[in-house]
Length: 98
Image (tube, rainbow, N blue to C red; front, side):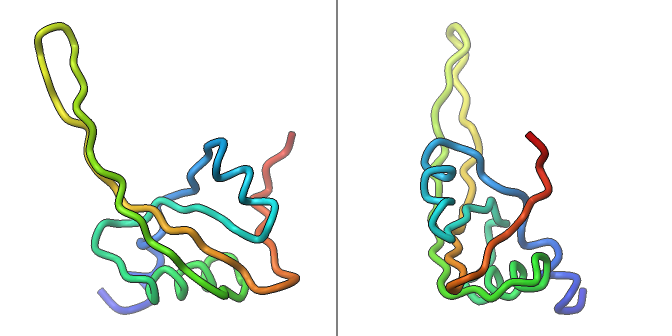
């Protein structure tokens, strides 16, 4: 797999939550990313996919949670999310119609 193919697989999707929509008004976006990615890969991937300039990337690991269904106990998988800050004057239009 070459570098550009890897970058196209780094970002899995956007995270839609109350917190992500609240911070999204200020050039911040939250993405679900693959588990073995780095900040520089996330920066390059977002710049390639959305044609924007990224100022800063912060990565956070979301820990797995225990779920119970009756007496059966299981775990949800943990995942990684990236908080991406764009440079001044940049924004991402996801093309969502209200």
